[in-house]
Length: 148
Image (cartoon, rainbow, N blue to C red):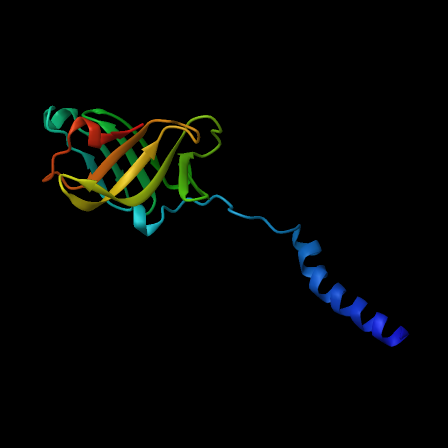
């Protein structure tokens, strides 16, 4: 009986020791690399506005550019923090806790066909979601470019 208890204690210790030494288990640690599913030149082309007014999100492996026209925010390299929260990716400037955008890629019915779309929320519990497409050929109606 004593040998069984000692054996189970030794087994538990060999499993727990690496966790205790490493400081525990951390889930969803932030990185500086955007996931491959998000890496594209995303546009929000609407039927009612000109190209200079279209929203644009350009995501590469180590940078993100968000904005329209000449007004844009750019985070590159170690300035960019990427963290997955549920089905969304939180991309923000490293060290900033308040200002972040949440991104997710999904299929949406736009102009009569299901297309790959990037959804962007300006904060986690936002009721407004912006829709972006790859390229500029397909124009969205106003109701397709935003979700409420």
